Length: 73
Image (tube, rainbow, N blue to C red; front, side, top):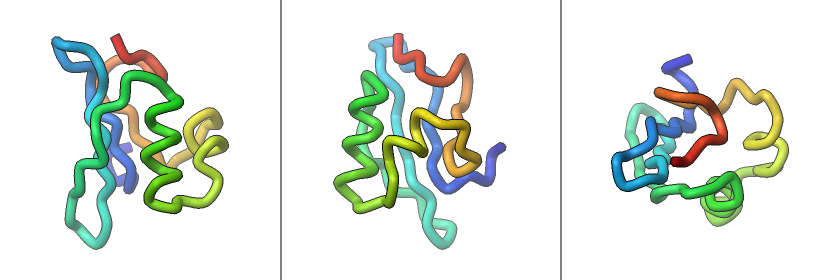
């Protein structure tokens, strides 16, 4: 699912996952998430509707790259 507008990259060697939102072909880094709560916070900050449901549900809006979803270490 590489065309999802929210990309959660693979876990970095230091831990955490870089979170990027793609709008009109432009990627913007929202930050590095160390938990689902961080990811929800990033989405809430940019006023994405229903961030809890997006992150905790099986949303096609989020692409988890490398590794398992919801793992940050």
